[in-house]
Amino acid sequence: MSHTNPGVKPLLSMVLDEGVFTLRRAHWEDLPAILRLLAADQLGTSRENADDVGPYLQAFQQINEDPAQLLVVGHLNGACVATFQLSFIPGLARKGSLRCQVEAVRVAAELRDHGVGAAMMQWAIEEARNRGCTLVQLTSDKSRKDAHRFYERLGFVASHEGMKLAL
Image (tube, rainbow, N blue to C red; front, side, top):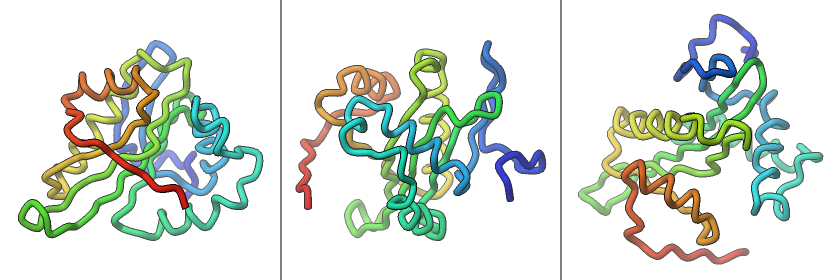
C-alpha cells in the first residue's frame, strides 16, 4: 500500500499553519527521507549515509516484519518531516511487564517548536499504554541538552545512567 493512498488512516492528524501533519506507519518508500532526517541530526552527520539506502534495507525489512517494532513517519504536505521507532520489549522485571523503547526521534528543523515532537511523543506514550506497557523509556545523548529539556517537559525523568558499548 503506497503512502499516498488516501484510504490509509493516519495514526495522528493535526493542523499546523504550514498544513496538515499526519503520522503513519513507515513504508519502504519513506526510507530515503528517514535517512535524511537521521543524517541531518548533529550526531547523525558522522554516522549515517543518506545517499546509500542499501545498508539500511535489511534493517527496515526486519523492523517492518516484527510486530514488536513500529517505525513511524510524519508527513506534511506530502513530505516526510519526522520519524521515530517504538520497540515493545517483554521482560521479567517489574512483574513481567512490557516496556516501550523510543528510538531515533527526529523532526525536521523547520518544524521544531511547532508542537510536532510533543504530539508524536504523546501518541507514542498512548500507543505504549494501549499495548499494555508499564514503562516508556528512551536514551538521549548527553550532548543533547535541548532534547533533555523537551523530554523532561513531557514528564520523562533522568532516573538512570545509561551505558553503551560500540561493537
